[in-house]
Length: 63
Image (cartoon, rainbow, N blue to C red; front, side, top):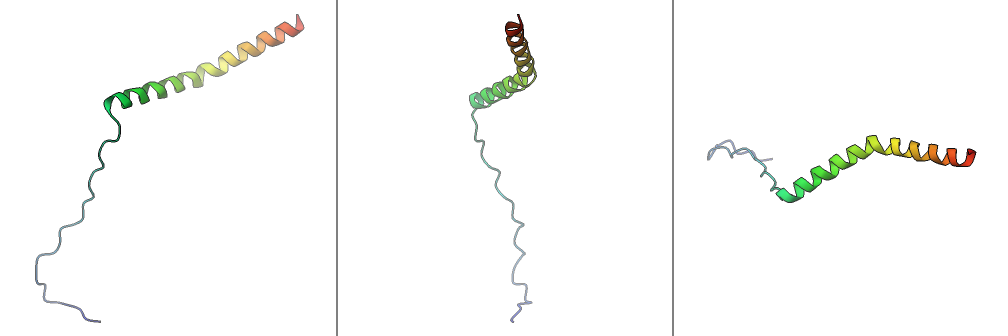
C-alpha cells in the first residue's frame, strides 16, 4: 500500500454539519404549544370527569 508522507498542503478543515432550518412557523409553534397544554390538562381532568360519569351511572341504576 502506498502512503504519501510529503504533506503537500494544509490539513482539511474539520467537518461541521449545517444546522437544519426551522420547520415550524411561529403560528404553528403556538398551535403546537396550545395542543400540548390542552392534552396535559386533559391528562389530569379526564380521569376525574370519567369517575364522575361512572358514579352518575351507578347512582342511576341503584336508585
